[in-house]
Every structure is written in structure tokens, then in C-alpha cells.
Figure 1: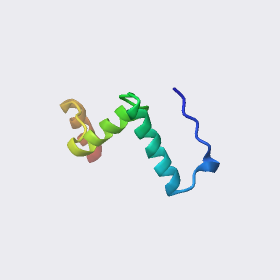
Figure 2: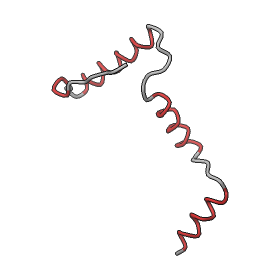
Figure 3: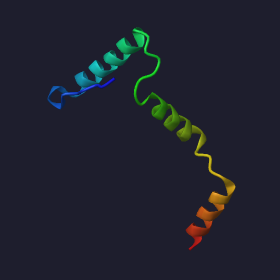
Figure 4: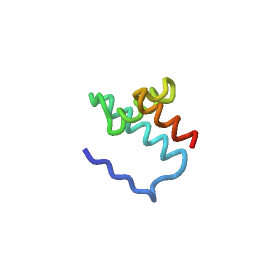
Amino acid sequence: MLIVIDPSKAAGQSFAERSQELVRQMHAVGLKRLPGDRRHQQRERSQHAGIAIPVEQLQQLRALAQD
């Protein structure tokens, strides 16, 4: 699927409202996931829980921070 947005039609809040309505309509017709959904969900999880990295990598980062 490809969504094309005409920037000249973007009129502040009304553009945001129209975009949200488009998303609601897409979900209403059965689309379970939209482009970017997984990225947004992962970002939210990372903001709440942090980013898991291996202990060895954390040690390397701490060593670099001390230099």
C-alpha cells in the first residue's frame, strides 16, 4: 500500500484530524496493522522499559564514557 500526501493540503489541526479519521477508517475495514505501527509500539515500549543491551556491550559503553 502507498499513501501519498499532498503537503499543500496540510492545514494544521484539520490535517491531523483528517489523518486520524483515515486511520480509523482503515482499521474499520479490517486492516490490523498500518505502516509504522510496529515501530511506534516498539518506541513506546522502549520509552517505558528502556532498551535491553547485552552486559558486555554495557561494560564497553561505560568504559568509553570514562575515557
